[in-house]
Length: 97
Image 1 (spheres, helix red, strand yellow):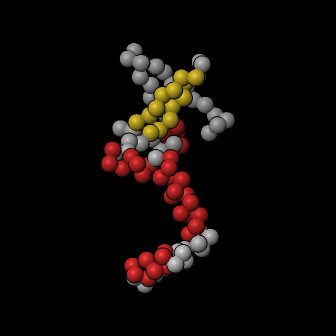
Image 2 (cartoon, rainbow, N blue to C red):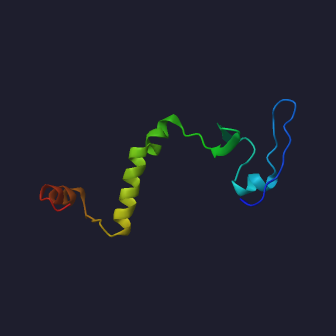
Image 3 (cartoon, rainbow, N blue to C red):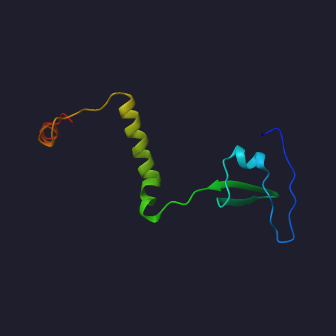
């Protein structure tokens, strides 16, 4: 899609229609939010998703770094399983976990 372009007209109210091929390429559906950024004489549109306020922390940079680290540890086999919480506490106290 980067080699192709399509024209769309700005209506009297400043609205544009995103062609179906564009909407499908970036999975935009009716009602979705789109960020609009102006860089010089270029307009950049990018799909956005709202995150519920109660879930916002889980999308913070710090949380996402932790998620990535945990995923890497799991993939590398750097995990331990315990039969119960007491075994976990014992391993933590012994510096084994």
